Image 1 (cartoon, rainbow, N blue to C red):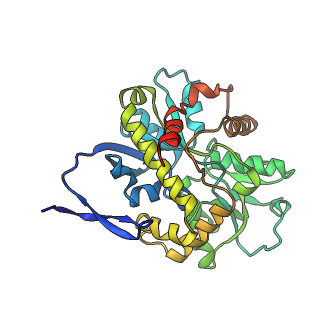
Image 2: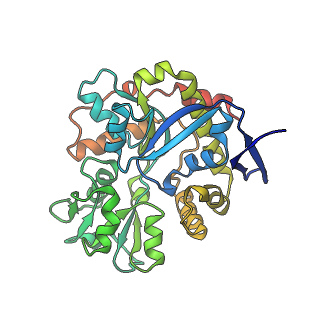
Image 3: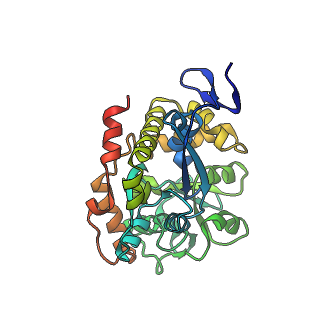
Length: 331
């Protein structure tokens, strides 16, 4: 007789529930994520639908609350794999560290934040923010740099035409806005939609839609870890790709149901609205390969923000071998 563990693996795509047994030996992977957001739905789908477990992995997820903190955890040995903006890998590489982190998979190919204002603006134009203050996030982080990139593309100069507040920590941006700071704030989901539903904020623009495709959220690990644990990294990438394929084939409502266990306090209806929004603007990659073109745009954005000392060769930071193998072997 099989012994069942308390947590059941929900296989929504098959319409059945398969219990996981306690007999299999799973490899432990400590994953530190930049924040907890519907923006990363492929990861949560892979976790909740049992794709990582099917690959023999026990993924221990921790919220780092910022890519800088994720990188600190990775470099200090508190995490095996980091999940956040690839800009952090460039900072470390340019510092001359020998065992620097390398990106081996990508989940999102554009910014996932939305500009939230204090009143509805159905006919919003970016010129509306002129003379206003936007709570933009940590200076040097991809969300803040992408926001500045979009502002410049729209003919607005940060610091001159619009004030971008970079003094507030990532996790405190929504509370600061609710406490009266700023005219606008850049928020990820589901926070942005929750504020809108409560009538305390209104989504006026998609920063990701206006920025275009850019390397945004990736998985990275130190070179030494990739070398010593190539089989684990391959299994991890396989599971992630299964999650990406599942997301691509299912409706926003099905996605909401699949990721709900990762957002127990969230309204499933809001999760579906958010999933539809992200899906419609092509936020989620359909495969885990880090594309060179979007990687170069990321570096140009960083350079334009004054945060990149020197350009880093794509092949130094990107190891696409795991992602390419996953695409070839996972069906």
